[in-house]
Length: 99
Image 1 (spheres, rainbow, N blue to C red):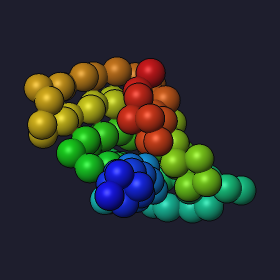
Image 2: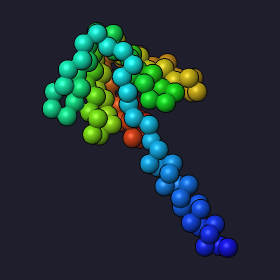
Image 3: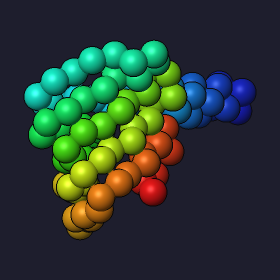
Image 4: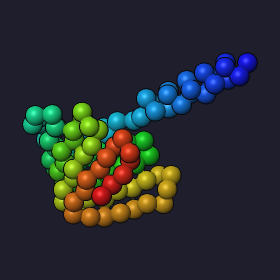
């Protein structure tokens, strides 16, 4: 019975780790691909879970699930009372950390 419980907990833990959400594009004026990155311009909105990032332009790397945002950057989170404004953002979507 202990072994079954252990495997069940392990399965749930692994599923949660693999179920990470990706940084996705909601809207942008223009979109192009530069190497492994997508380049977006003009009123860009990126979403990951409850977090929404607004900016003038952004580069999203789909391999690393990260983003760099430029110009009038604003981060809103629906769950946490977060409303941050900046001129530049580096966002790690795997760890959900913004710099």
